[in-house]
Amino acid sequence: RMQKKLNDDNNVIMAAYPPLSEMNQSDENKCIDDQLYSSFELYGIDILEYSTNKRNNLEDDDESEDSGKDSVSLQDRINSRLFVVRETPFGDILWKCPIEQSDSVAEHLVESSHLNHRLNCHSFRFMLPSLEEGNRPPVRNPSWMKECMKGTLFSAFKVYATDRSVNSSGIVRMNFPEHVYVWFDHDDDRWAFYFGLKKLSVCDSLAWIVYKLLDDKDGEEYPGEHFFAFLSDALDEIQNQMGLLWSRCIGTRYFQNIQEVRKEAESTSGVEGFGDCFVDAVWLPLKLAKEATLRLFGSGWIRSPSLVESLIERLHEIALDVPESNSKDDAGTPSIELFSFIQTILKCYLAYANKRNILICAMIDTAVTGELTGFYPSASTSARTEEISIDKPKASFPEFCKILKTLWPAVALKEIATMYRIASDEEYPRSQWSRAPPRGVSFCGFAVAAERRCFFTRLRRDNSN
Image (cartoon, rainbow, N blue to C red; front, side):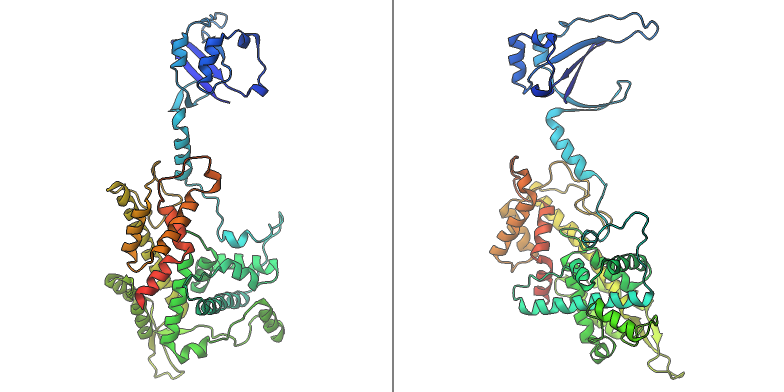
């Protein structure tokens, strides 16, 4: 129902516009003359149902006065405006907005809302059945968790490398939540893995990495497709630097699925450990870690001397002297635990990716308006929940071409057209076809297109060759 308030001294006129099918027409409605009815039809109003009330005198409840139905002229009624009003129970107006602006205001309120109903690891948890009320999630021992974390990570790494070797386009995506779901064969194990992973991710480097991958996000939010791709390239580089040490410590010595974990557990006759399938800790010499860092951040599209310098300084802080043998005379070689090193460079990459996110958002904004809006996503905000203005900047196709050419000079025109179509479909879905289409694409649409086309991964690898 829509209601209209018109104030005339102490008179308050209320107008309501329910559907004709639900309206009980009173004698008062039937007396409305044809001229008044025709006038309100111009405003999309079927019937004007009005009444006039006089505020009661607080000192004498018995005194009341009717102001009359003709206190507002026909012309004043026609020239009146509809408002969306928020008021207190006592009639005090807190907020008032013309109804013609209500759509824009509603859209802005939704976009600026900081309410986020997305669960952690939403894609993975969405496939699991709900736990019954009162049931606690299953708990597994630390050895089980350790082997499952390593198994899911390195088996996904192997699958991704295989898919990449047979796909010449470079558009390869590892859907880690689906991979983990298939890796297990029972929901109890899946729930146990999720809750154990969530708890360990606060203090364990390997758990942090796997948890970030399991919390797979799409579009402009991080991590995404490019996050696993960068992790894969980092593992490749570390493997090249370690050489035989990688084969001896990791190689193919990990579980391919949960069935192999159960077989290993049965062979140990219920012992909590799972044998010597893995060395407890894999140590990467500091020298090799620095070489890998220079290769990942000092060349290609990610070329930042200051970033490399700060990262190497951080590696020196977390390095430990690890003896290469059991000899007491061996002072040890400065080394870093493998997964601590990977966690460190991934955190650095996420910070870099966020800055890249801000840069591209600014490019789209200035391409349209010629000036900055003054608000861009920070490390703690994402583009879907940021406080965007009601009229978001939209880049037309020529402007979109210039932006992508600036980011990747070698990008093909067909690739630009494909990404623009994906971005347009994202911002103008079928549910919005009743409205006029937008005049371009915003950063949100671009980010989704970049994710689906593996844009940043292909760009980084193309500039690294």
